[in-house]
Image (cartoon, rainbow, N blue to C red; front, side):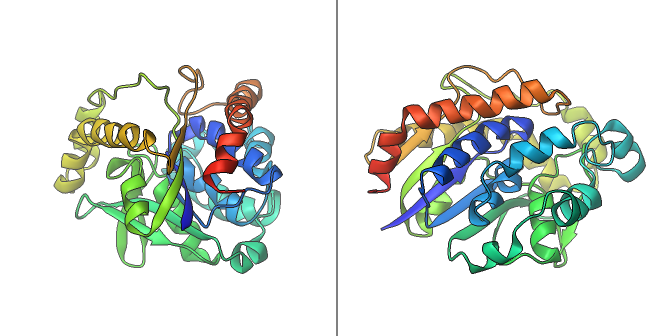
Length: 282
């Protein structure tokens, strides 16, 4: 029976998920596969490379480095999170991403992206780190307006959360029968229509199918959330979520806020550690 870890995105709210994952790694809890959306992919890859602490460490270290994340980067490169610096230079030279462990670990790692041409989700299984792997992770976290469209293997891609924000159903279809789902919104959250849709339509006017997906995203998200809540009632699905709305924004340059978000994830995971171990039959 395959055990999966499903990671919602949420930009810097993803540090909550990083806290959860670090508790799992520190307690030698290893799923058979991880699927991440957006920040869930950007931070979730550290699970396969077995690097607890890495996500919170480099985000705090680079908090004032404009090349990593800044309005200046957005204006000069087209990406708030520098496409080359954050996804290629940093993991090679600033906070090393253990590509050897990533490759040797049999754990499956999946990144979810949105195909700009079709408006549908693309699910990419990544088992070793090469340029395409890093670009798929980058694409998964490329939020409209805040990032350029990423072209990988001939496909134009954007943030996976547009088309599949919580890919529990997909992972179940891949044979993952027991799943730990990490959400970055509290239990009472309901997504509303995107207030930036006029800007989205202008920015993506040549890509009507992804515009339609963005227009309907709140409907898709709330339906997925309802499905997760139904599955949560069953013994083979465990859901971890913040106890209250996380106060960190999509972007943050506040190390204390980052740490607090991360600690909230650790706290929830530690409180439910016995349930997690039971789910994974440890």
